[in-house]
Length: 314
Length: 273
Figure 1: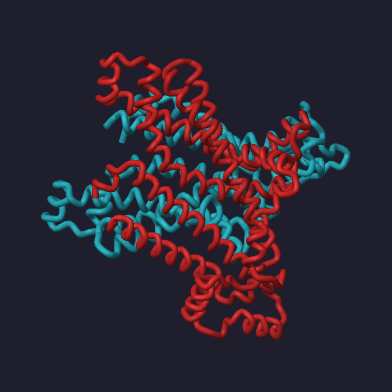
Figure 2 (figure 1 turned 180 degrees about the horizontal axis):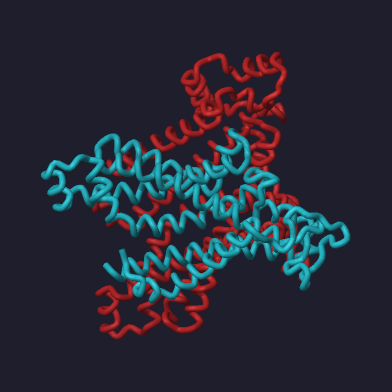
């Protein structure tokens, strides 16, 4: 129990720290945020007006406290350009980014885990070497360029999938899946490479453990040793990188959503930079950061639940 | 430091280093010579496919893609080098303070470094650039800031490890000051992990710059940039697929080169130990 309380305290302090950083970057570092919104050669009257609406006459510490208090109460402020609550706008965009992240995570694990097992079992053979080389390539490819290549292959040459746009799930689930498949594949490739590498190394490490020798000397067949003993122990460490994979997917979706013109958070983020919508931008960044922190927290807790050794060690 | 023979034994390292050497050579040549003036337009040759006169074809203004890619190597190396230098310098100082001081200062500094993980991918750079504006200088600073935590973590663990070593205690007993201990006794022992991290952060910076510039938030004209070339190429993806493919392939090659170099160096150092 004490362990979970400590984890919760860490979570709270991380969220607080992340909010401070976000506030500092958008409200303190630029000097005059109103100037950022209106540009360098803005009309002084307009500037004064905007400073009042943004509440800039108050000291930064006071503004930060007010922002956090409102955010905790569920009020995330209003967008300067859309004149609508930020919460509403983000809620509209959220499903796209969440579906993209989940689909890409699904693809990462579905493709990455079998290939990781394969590479470990074929260790030293040519096919495994080839896959390892492809893994290096997967880690080096920019995901948005990969999107172009996928579009060229599957949209232009084979005409299997649309090259841009999004259909909501509620309208047509099959079309929604089709419109998200290429972007989530582009996002998944670096993750797949990470999973293959990580799983291969863990599997090979585990294969040298004593319990594996015991299992073999019991007369278990090689398949049973692999799947019932080695793999089980290797998948637990893989769970720890799932949090990182989701975070990477969210980061990558900022660019990939713009390639495929998907109306998600990443797309909104770039639009709001173009329109200098500072309140919207600030809240969106906080949203993404808090989601990432929460996911890592959940993964941490899951890890403890699955593997009691971690909990007991401390 | 390691012997050259040992380093060459690592195949990854040799492949990676040759790729970087090739691109570096291209950069040096581009300082004096490109087949065409990179910004020279030729309306008669718009979106021409690769051919002997234009090795990688031409873009929508009839500019030679190969010359523009060559010029882009300058920006890529400049951004990689400077952003890694910024990250290394700040990271070393933060890590040294945290590792040497310990206690609550260590706790706070490392918490701040960990908070970077909450801003995934290029989000942190996007935040900085959205406030300070795009451009070569701001991009370098933003990518440098993104690199700080990686170096800070290595430097911190190095300092924690080495400050307890006998040779450091002996130096202290001889009356060496903290600066001398850091520069003469501790830092030389951390060069290998730092070089590996620098190589991997170099490729990270190049990937991030490509993404930022693709979004229009990174390097601005007239500074050449591969990322911006890709965003210019996107509308012509069907009519001139070579434009997109060639430009992205060069980015991938550079990132791959530095990744292989980093992995190869790590393997080489690990095998020694």
